[in-house]
Image (tube, rainbow, N blue to C red; front, side):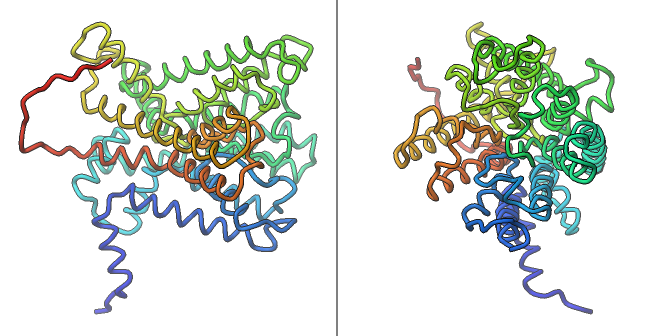
Length: 450
């Protein structure tokens, strides 16, 4: 009988006893490093880039953020852009999908705790359904990105030619569905600010990718509204509300700003740009106008939207929409002196509220610490720096033009924020989902709050 090599045995043992999110965080790091080294190959770039440039770009791609320190159009060759698109696709699949794939591919048996967490996180009742959901995810990704690329060809091919137009369409479809925000155009999508196809297809892709695979599967498999789970209802209502707020306030605040909406003469063009920029802010990070030209009030609004982010088990980052919705429901219950939190005829458990509190607390500490460190080590406007940190945490990719001003240390800080913004909340959620029954109960004490 042939014995397996000792390193393989040791690896399987380590994977078997290590929590899936922790393993996958390591795999994310490995993917970032490999991506950075790949981008350093001579045929990947048209000009020499530093290791810092390569690692920052790889981190931004794997975490589907979109912050860039190099010009994707002119600095990268076709092969470099292909590597970038591959990193975006792998990063956009998400931790939970990777968990099922890795564990299934290696033939590992999940422990009860790991299995339970993954099953509950993806809202499934059995491991077989969990596996089916993974293949559903692949089908959704494939169909959405192919359809998106075909439609985007209608806009990109007439402007750039047959071959380049096809590649621009494929790249933007992958980038949009995975909420990455990378573009193969130096000026982003500003040249297509009023193009009807771009303004419909790109938002459709990143909204579909941002609401989460569980929601997509729920909508596809269950009866309208009453058959949907509480998570799906909260996610859809929260997403709709944030879209209305983002688009409406963008139009109101920027209507007469000559650097953004007011550069367009017609009301229809202004509303089109307000639609695209207001809806892309939470997750995708594309731009059809000058982000550096936004009013301070609009920038502050966008920071809040970026920190909120997309949905759980989606291609987006941030705190997640359902986290904020549960926080608001808990606050409302407190002021109404209710002892139970509920929505749409379903109650929300105390453990979920505690998880929300922990996620918001750790996000606040991370954002504050990163902003403080960057302000202490860099010259620059407070709003520009804090906007950059919020964009990195929400893995959005919008910038007021400050990314190029970062030192190597500043890039490292932003890379850490991008990584934790994508990986950290889910990893924390794993440990929060592991219930530990206390052996000792203490008498209740009084603490004065507020």
